[in-house]
Image (cartoon, rainbow, N blue to C red; front, side, top):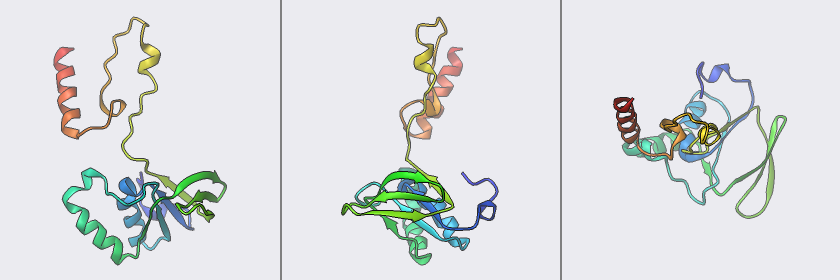
Amino acid sequence: MLCAGPEALPDGPIVVWGAGEGVELALDLARAGRQVRLLDPAPRFVPAAYIGSRSKAVLRWAEEARLVTESGVELVEIGQDAILVRHADGRSERIACKVLAIAPGRVAHDPLSQALLGSGIQVQVVGDARKPRSYGNAIHEAAYLARRI
């Protein structure tokens, strides 16, 4: 997440890995004049569901900014000032970059609940710790939990 804007990033090439979730970030950076490569592990680009009705506009703007999604790209290694990727055709490429933004998609992050099971502490898993779903579901589950407390 960029809090201060693209000008706060170091000069040099930027790679955004994960086009479905990262296309808007890559687009903002490209429009700010930054050199950006947009890579995605999927065989074809599919915008994140939350982009919804604005996806046509986002794709049009990306085309205008000459931002191309490179699909079928596996992130193999992260090094100092460069990453190593493997393309769908099997060739490897080392890409120089000063910034790597990883947008892996919606994944649950729950490092604590399993450790607390059996501890005597009642655990309720909510928000980003649960399987990705709509924000509406997340709001409803949080409201339900709050009423139970």
